[in-house]
Length: 343
Image (cartoon, rainbow, N blue to C red; front, side, top):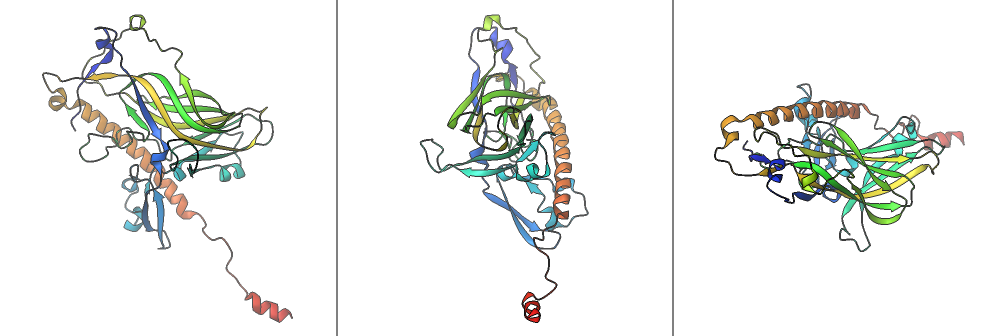
């Protein structure tokens, strides 16, 4: 898989005060509408349809082994469709009732003067404790967003780029913005990002104590705009993988002194302004075609990601198949006949 060769932006900074900051949409929840479905048969042989998002649909049947039928493996798919997202409560907030009622849904924006009227955004319900207790909840994707999953066979684009949870070529982050609809809750909102080293960081976006749509913004207090005061670090031009960030979720915190019980929130997107980590350039020799170092490293990392992802999803599939589906008991007596006999 051919990769564009790179030159570090830090080296280019030596040439003068050039601007490298770029704005990109990390994730746009209106793109995650359930617009397709995966179909197959359950353990009883009944055909079922599961709504999914076509662009982010992932097949984890390759990690399931040979004990499952083709019909069962056809159901071993999942995507970033909004109903698949999870609410993870901390220990002081977790209860059977809270876990059952806290969920993520598609929410259609039906009215207003926003440009995304008619789109579906992320709707979140979290059941916090009603007593005085610090609590928090994370809204996370159904699986860790894959950094090296190609969109097609060409390998020129990754599946989760362009608003689906992944931005590549990210240097220093300058600002993060989140478009959300407040409902006058006094809770705090954080954005969770994970980088190419696997380190997860959280960014404080602000309070949700407002009504209506608003863009909450985090600005990097350590960002240096003047190039002459920056510490210049020059790295080898080749071979270096291109750094990235991916969306790891939201975190909502509730202070013990604030109101508990149900929290309702809506989220449209998350955007990032950042320095480019590298500058693309044409070189005299095509290093990657000659050595293939980056391609090999990314293939190995992709395999590790898929193995971890597949094992987790297969275990969830097995648990789902074991769950009881009956809503009522099978009648033992004919109720009409029993009633007549009683008369």
